[in-house]
Image (tube, rainbow, N blue to C red; front, side, top):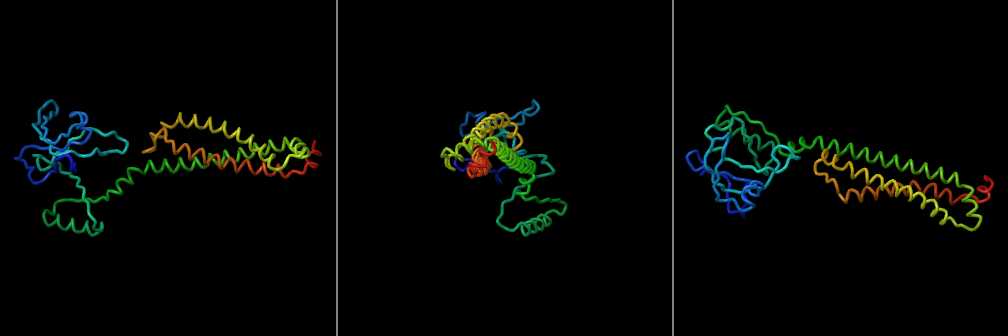
Length: 267
């Protein structure tokens, strides 16, 4: 727990009921109360409910960590050794790191503890499972957001395809005249795609404005999501532009293949 480069230590057998009280503090504690200086060796007095609980010597510095919820802010925290508590809690959470298999490790631990005291009740939960449970809501929201995002891209592409197709139908005669006057297929495709790009640009500008306005709400619902994630916006614009280009190219290609005489006859 303690930083090796801070000159501190972890709790050990020296910390008993009769030894001087010690504590380990985190980075936020050192930053708030000690101006960021190395706290190891400092002594502090703790008060609880307006009553002094004694002096504590800081013997270690720990990194900031999320204790209860992934969305919580890093709070100034003191850690006390359970061996120095006169009335320790009945429920104790112990973190065990091991390279052994989970089933074998649990069997050995249960057997060892029962040899000491059969009245001790134990419950084992893999740390990965605890993290997965805490992220269930975030994963659900991420999956739903991704699904509705893809659905929005699909609807936008279908809508753009319909608008461009309708525009080509309305300008069939104009396209026929252009082709009769010598316009080639490439120029017709460029004409249609240029108008589609105008619609796409307007849609992207409006969409970016709305997404920036609602990004803080999304960040509050999804852990680790930044309200102004540049990479996310670039990927969204690129993917939507690719789908829109494909949806616009199909009617543009169809327009470039019009027979000028048929197009003029419709006039």
